[in-house]
Image (tube, rainbow, N blue to C red; front, side):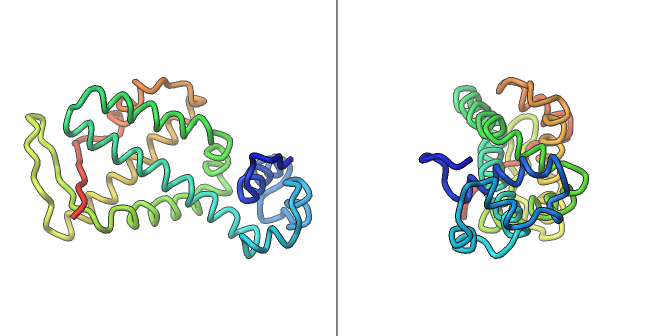
Length: 197
């Protein structure tokens, strides 16, 4: 399966998604995985400890890309810059389209709760050094300084991003880049912006 342009982790991620068609990931052996990926056992252990580590790193890598672009997109929504908005939407859609097999794998019932935990942990980590603002309809930004409100808003925003991904997957990833904010808007009641300290 591995070709000269595929990294060892990438080949293992793809192989895990393919093998899951036949059995749950907790029943996939390392031998099966490295055989399907076309990598050596030593290469596997150079990058990963076990199958769970493959899943964790694959999910974390996707979450970091998706969340970084989604936050950029939400900030553009908050600032209403049309050109940047369309560019961010296209980039986000490209990532989701590129990894749609992995996203479908993450959202399978037997993987969902573990993926959700990784998604929230990654989002919290990503936002840890950022200030959060609510943005009113007339574009007035108000910083959230109360920690309880900050945590609640962070949780809400993260849940909305995950819900958007689920809606997108349920629609077989057919939305165009221009539709992302429409999907997000179905799950979001207010605009949120993030700025680095």
